[in-house]
Image (tube, rainbow, N blue to C red):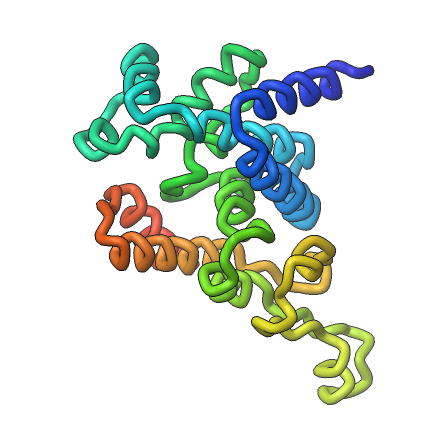
Length: 232
């Protein structure tokens, strides 16, 4: 077994033992989707797998515990994070796993830290984890469909003889077609990927949900949304 394989196996067991089975199923979905997105974007797939497995490893820790850990690591906290410690599960996890698994790759650590609230000017890996977390196959379709529709731009095929043939060959995304089977077997090479615009729509969807639920909105979500509005 190579060193990366041993490390990933240790990461998997750590995460599996840290969350309930339903949460671990979500994590597996995120790993699968982030791996495919990473390959489509010519990113290191191992980095996506590691970040995917670790992004929610502290999701089920108590808010008070996360605040306490954040203070121990001297993480700067604002009033919203102090009152809503669950928002810290990504940033705190990035600090803990860096030490536990000797992860020095800042792109992996930032992808873990930013996956909930997002961040302006994220690396491509952080974008992948952010979107995979939003879009994994068990998410509600009413939430994910606008993001998928924005992300997946049908690719016109160069070998099509005319516009009609091209239209027949490309994959058009519809809500009916976008089921779990389609997502699980998606071929991103059939599409042009609008990553930044998809992040914008995901932020909009998150803000709509928080407003409908009368929940607090962290300023970083607004900053992320505004950044990708200006940088489509």
